[in-house]
Length: 328
Image 1 (cartoon, rainbow, N blue to C red):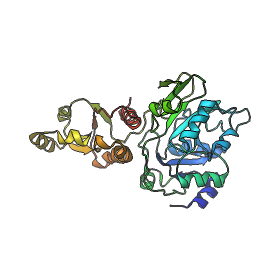
Image 2: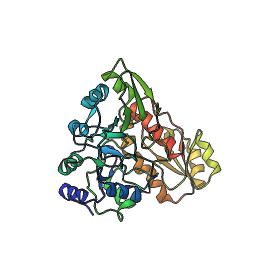
Image 3: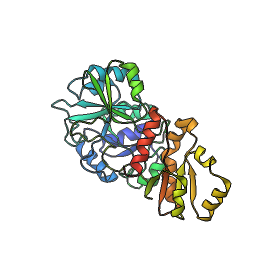
Image 4: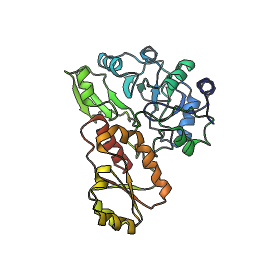
């Protein structure tokens, strides 16, 4: 059932779990301070019990109420990129009621989303809202209300339809608590070079997780359709798997000779273009929708042609998602 922001806030404050739009992907939302509601998220998603949830806040001042300090580097990045697709690891204060959302950890991953409907809901609630992606754990992240409904529609009382997500890839997660370095714990829309422009004298470590905290999206197989997916290096490798599907860029598709296209057709191999490398943003926006579409083809296996997405924020994020889809 589609609901408005007032209905959404009422449901959340009454301990329910709903789906909400963000600029990245749709989230499965519950009030982050309510342990029973948090438990419902884990149950609905079938999420591993040790996989913490990102908590979403209306503004910086709301974050301050739950953490020990706001480190200078974190604050600088918040002022530059928030609201937006970047999340921060912070230390909880002793009285913080967010430990159910963090799976008992002393750290929280905090984000200020850049979507007017979700921000309105958080403001109406007056409390932080935990919201992992609104999909069954390990499956494709939804970028539209329709995708949420197809997966979880019978399990939740409402979905706030905010249209198609404008970015389509999850947020970058960083640990900016230290004074001399920043760790990128999960690649996303905001890249290291953009962070470096804000903090030019700080060392930036990619994939530098050095503590026991499990970063959302880092340990388990994520973002995958029901159909098994593997990565191949050469297009012709799929010919050994008649009746499969192959994801590839428009450039790779256009490079296939016509006689090869006939062979693929005879072998019942579905070629799925993810778009052109000339527009990484468009690839990102439609990426999860295209990935999920392979399940409708009823093929036994799918492949992803190894692709150089480039050394940009979205390029690295897309490569990370492809690796996760293939079980890496």
